[in-house]
Image (cartoon, rainbow, N blue to C red):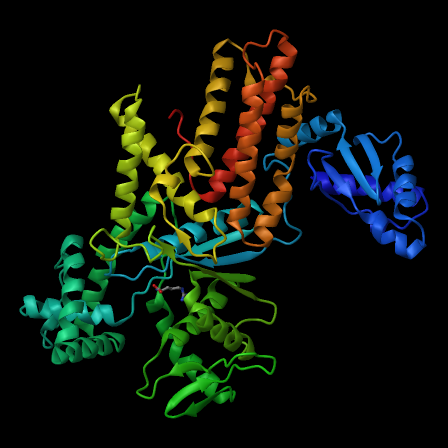
Length: 588
Ligand code: ARG
């Protein structure tokens, strides 16, 4: 379905041509003076130069040519040459009717469906998830859902950090505590136990203990590094421990991400890329892409136009060890082989930007990915506390994601329980839904690259630009629709009618923007655009709600028109929050 603004532009194009001007001047924009009009066209100003005419004369000609147009109710030429447009209410109503007949509310399928891999989450196995991982999960999940809604084939990959030094630390600490386990007996040739030697709770304690101990004890650290090396070179016993760590940790991660409504299609990680490294290194050497620099194997990626120094991509350290660059390049080889993606989008802290610039350039230059494969990076800013410093626990430690979520849940439960009329169980469930909206909307309503302050009081408020406010609006609509249905009438049978008030018209115009907003949010990979939109939409709805007697309207047809407007508003809001990764409760 076409966008409202495009339909309008077409109408203006016809008018420009009819009046004897070229249609390239006919572009329509949203009004920046909503007190005067709804849309505007400033093309007469640009046309004035080409036609050596006063812009107001051109604007007048166009206005005259629009006479009889079914789209507009009022057009005015205003000095020095603006064309101010007020839409015809019946035209807007028919647009909304067409929207509501479509499953995706007017968002078109793409011309070419792309296969897109979204690399987000990025949790490090055996280490607890901390708030830094929150942003990647929340933004990535939303970008994934937006791309899906836009009609693409999207694959979300958690890309675990599962191949590093932390594994060596856990192995070393386990050996210290339970040296008799068969994993540490090099002469053991039997089957290793299926049961893990540790639970998640123990693993959560083992890693920080080992990590702290290694910082103080050089020989212990050496041992952990050696264990990492042995694991990475196929040590049988350590590989078996690694599998236990993976099983225990991944089950816990699935639970944690699940609580955030974050779901991955692939649970792959750095370890999956390792088998591709030897051939890749061979290839890079043979084709002359890589050279040795101070003992390390590197690929130059600087370009003439660079304004700052871009260091070479590191393939192997002088001791032959693979690095972060290596793993990401090998992962691209694997992805190319298994999924042939048209696009890969990475979501991490913006401090990793340089790494991705190097990897992207290297992958293109060495033809690891095809010329046309798009590689994109979304770098996000830091989540700060109210003191403007990175978010911490009360005693200054690293805040674990679980604890943060639990805190917000409690906060929300207190609020909801205050005027609770529902059962305990429902209040709990509702609080969780509302809490999730507070966390996610609080994050997503900011441009990803910006740092933001995680302000619990503001994010959990039912008023203002918050997740709970949006949910409150949806719940309000649901309740009216339910009450209408309780009178024995069918919501789906109601037909949208043309607006009969300023607030109804304003609401309809907001609803009508949906496909334009989603297209823009997809193109710019910008969930914050959806947040800004649903905030405007919710405000428009609440204004309408306060000014309109809906259920007590006596004219049945009019009432049905209102109900249909509410129903489509709800569908739009729900589609949007689903793209943001949260949902609305029945009541709150
Ligand atoms: N595990 C990494 C971290 O915690 C993030 C991984 C991001 N994805 C990637 N392909 N490099 O920083």
